[in-house]
Image 1: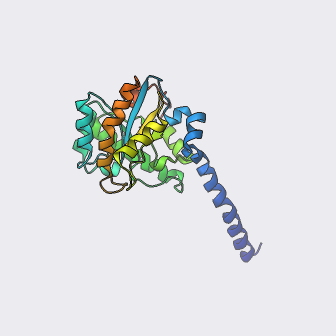
Image 2: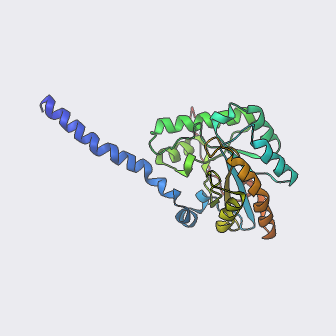
Length: 255
């Protein structure tokens, strides 16, 4: 084969292989479809005990906003699961340590809040490992849960979780609290519209990836959401009390 033909063949193979590789990596992304995920993938969606609701927050810790959520939860005697970004954790390690000491469950949201969809296996693994190790170093306890940015799991992310001993957990309902037009009432109504016993709520305790000041909207909605759960007879707490089975894996050497 001449060099010119070899070059054309290589280019053609790349044109075919790269989209195929991207499609393979993106295949688990179907889990982003909430109704389908809740029905077909209950463990990934965070379906737990029918008398319990898991309360989870993403994107912290934020020294400007997270303490307000901690104060509200403490006043009610409640604990939650916080999925931390490594890039935020390094800014407020003391706050993360306080959260863990107060009994909140600390989990991994990745290092950077970037979609995993176009990342390769190595980059995905490095991002998760870096965040996992940072959480463990700060809190003194290795995290066991992972939630991908934007809720998009990939093949590479599933493989990285298995190697790192992390269980991916998404949510059954959210408040769409990151939107600029959100209000405490809209967040409350959006959560309660889809919430059932055994569900997992997604909210945000930081506006680092949301509309500026949106955390105040979330904070305003939270008491109403908690009151509604109580009225319906549901206990509210972190995922480790929710009855979602963890993935039990043997970590590979060097991970």
